[in-house]
Image (cartoon, rainbow, N blue to C red; front, side, top):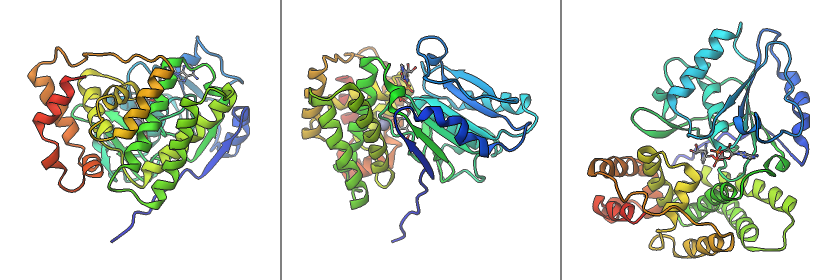
Length: 360
Ligand code: NAD
Ligand code: ZN
């Protein structure tokens, strides 16, 4: 047995207000006046929500606002990389992603593609990246995905929705400032928070489970139960705890895998464009058979926060669309194997998946 040697985020700051230290953190990383820092920022911070302190730009640094209405595409990464190369005199000093999973994943992918030839789609998979990425920094503004700690950046390409999983993907620096999450709308807070809860359930119930994953997963699971079921926590405490739950949930799946909800949600995302957080919730709501206890608690959390999920999203699908969804889902072999064991394909057949999707 050969154990994987995982990279982790090498530096992290945690604390309310720590975002204001960004200038000091970046200064020693500047490679020269012609090597800009590129700030990729969720466009919700362009007009609707104010960041607590200004973005510390200098020289030829650039701010690019990114819409999170759709999840990152390989073509979008390629276009950004081309634009950065064409408009900068030298390779950037660093890429800083400020936003949720969408923008953080974009920042990771752009940092990788600036130093690796070809197109982003060529690197979707496991350990295909050859060269170290540009220095990259992740600053989450919504908690739950664990994208701030993970070894992947999930992209939709022309043929598949699949991450660039590599040792060069994790951020070199993360700034965890829970205050940045204070304006997240309630529904979105729930969907992205449930991504964390579902990571924990899938990791803790999976056949890949080991003590490394379990210790992180149990902590994050307990934090989610406290956060989403307890009435007594102050908003600031909830923001702090959810940010750490996201971190631990992400760490938990680093050394294991996600499971049925993620495998099926990727299919929904690929065919219908359903976003990750809400897609996981829509699927998980129907997975009592696989995760009875987790789904029961999920339904209690949903009821407590008055969340109603979309129904019937697969009602009008064509057979071709069902097929495409099932193909994407079944291609995620490690997820199924983690969820159901080595003989997973005897348990989860195409018709079983078709019936499950039809309920959603
Ligand atoms: P998101 O980044 O798509 O953002 C959701 C919404 O919240 C957007 O409308 C955004 O503008 C808004 N928002 C973000 N911060 C806000 C703030 N502080 N105030 C107000 N609004 C704010 O949501 P997400 O759930 O964090 O990310 C989903 C993405 O993460 C998907 O693309 C998914 O594939 C990816 N993901 C990646 C990993 C990984 O390990 N790399 C893991 C899970 C999910
Ligand atoms: Zn997830």
